[in-house]
Length: 73
Image (cartoon, rainbow, N blue to C red):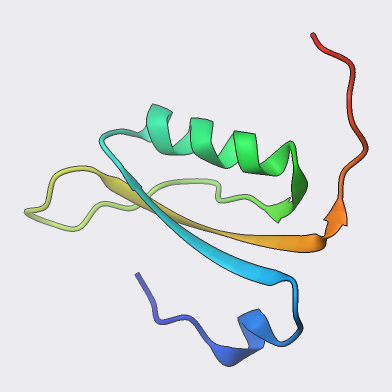
């Protein structure tokens, strides 16, 4: 993954989350859970380091903007 830049965290409440998991389904499920709670910039795809197991993704969350609760599906 690329280094986290200072501009990614320029204000309190901004968060960079690097996620590693066994497969796309696992890390995307985590990302979706975070996105239901906070304003989140979601990743379109995962990455994989050559020769390493699992996948990774990076997402950005804004903890200052709590989303309104939704009714259960």
